[in-house]
Length: 142
Image (tube, rainbow, N blue to C red; front, side):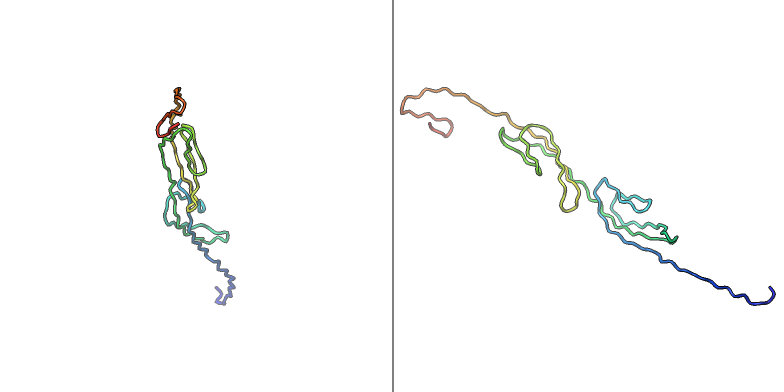
């Protein structure tokens, strides 16, 4: 305050504010992480993070969560037949689970199969037929 003028030189750097927009898809049961936040449901989210330059960095996320399709089947087949699910084929009674990836969403489909295979039917016949005679079983004649 001596009444003299002062000259102040200011070297100012203005850092950019970063903004990122994401459109992402995940499967049910998965989590999409942005910074410290984890998202498990479809929606539009905004996260404000601190960039390496100390400024705010905004991330806008449009998230779609695809459901996992689960199907339960109860099937019965005859002895000697096969039942196919995806790339699997079954011919014995049992409970099976197949996981089939979706070409559209990338999420798995789960197929639960309770398969019953009917017992083989065997019948023994002993018949006597005179020479030149016929013998019929069902629609077949011998």
